[in-house]
Image (cartoon, rainbow, N blue to C red; front, side):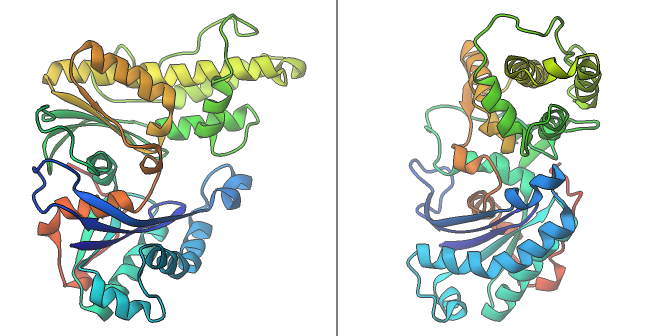
Length: 361
């Protein structure tokens, strides 16, 4: 089976073509061969806004999708002189993100997928973006001798911070989520306060990696919001405010000091990681899970990945995190999710709708 997948939930225009190598999801060995994966990023366009401007992103998706599709077909070795005919002959299924995400952006991908599917008479599988981040870890099935389920899934991105209990494939229970700013959003906002460029998560991680210990300028630790509360919800707006107030007390010379910026970035990153790890481990113990699954754009943060992996090792449970190319938004994960959700495929194309507030459970 070959799956053509489309992802436009935010500011990345993504198309991928996957070929399934095994029809049985529980079989040993790789499930998929990635024939192509193309991502057209809009980071440079949105930098001056310090974040994604939805209707500008929508316009770029409309412009980029036909181009990205042709590139994906070419990379997969398909003839592209008449790419619609090629899709009709060599693709079995179309997958598209329907939510959650920015609604104007989602609709571009949905409408593009519907037009292709209707012309080619192909079924569509509507895909949940959050589930896709989880399932990006199943590009190749883990060792069948090791138990994965039940698993505790930590989804961390610019728009979402969630803890999801995964009892098995397609069996989810949302046990906690952010009450305000998501972790990725906090990274972006605190980076902006520090005068650093967007995307903030990447910039802060780069600066924090330069930290060598010691105490240069910071005299107190930043807060770890809700870390001791007996629930699995998150709140990062207070951390952003604490950074703002802290900088207001600093003189201009200190604010521009390179060592101060490095230490602040390290402290911001560690504050966020402490909360994420503590809540995840508490949930892991309460629900007695066999593994921890990490997903979402912030899963590209090596420090978060390492600290969470270390905790899982101490507990003698499994740990899954996607490779870096699958951490941020991509269409490969959309194709993987479609494979596990083939029961949702439909040719009633008009029924496929974008849902910006789609929830996994």
